[in-house]
Amino acid sequence: MFLASPQDDPIAQALFDEATAEEGYVPNYVRLWSVRPDIHEAFGAARKLLNVRTNLSPREIAILNVTTASRLEDSYCSIAWGTRLAHETDAPTAVAVLGGAEAQKLNRREQALLRWAKGIVENASATTQEDVDGLREAGFTDRDIFDATLFVAFRLAFCTVNGALGAQPDWQLAEKAPAEVLAGVTYGRPVEGVAAS
Image (cartoon, rainbow, N blue to C red; front, side, top):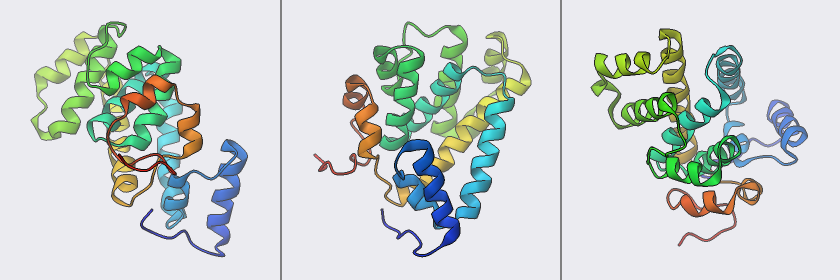
């Protein structure tokens, strides 16, 4: 990480304590975001609100996040969300999505979400009415489409901050990932404690 975590800051320490209680350790992204714990809390609250009020399934959310992180070549979120997608589907499907492929096991809705996320990352201003109509034809409501776009936008913001400021994937995160997912993430910053090849 390129920035130092605040020292003797009770608000940052509360973040660390909460992360330790949930994860068993303090993830590198939490150390980074502790520079602005108020923003971390507000951003986390917005993402949580989206998660609990959306009609998109956990599997659909994972596809959006994996596609976004992998298109940005962000190893941290690719490992984290690739692991979640592997649990929602299987490791080969997660690896295919990490590689930008429209995996055979994804249904029509999921393929449409994958294409939408790719399009946003590549050039959000190049999306068209036809792209949105394609999502509607796949069964998404306008609210679903807005939610899907927010998931991509939030992941873009999170990956950008973490990547630009040098947050490495935690070795604990990598340890829990399927071997196929780890092997499929050949870009971005190396796992903490692993030399870049």
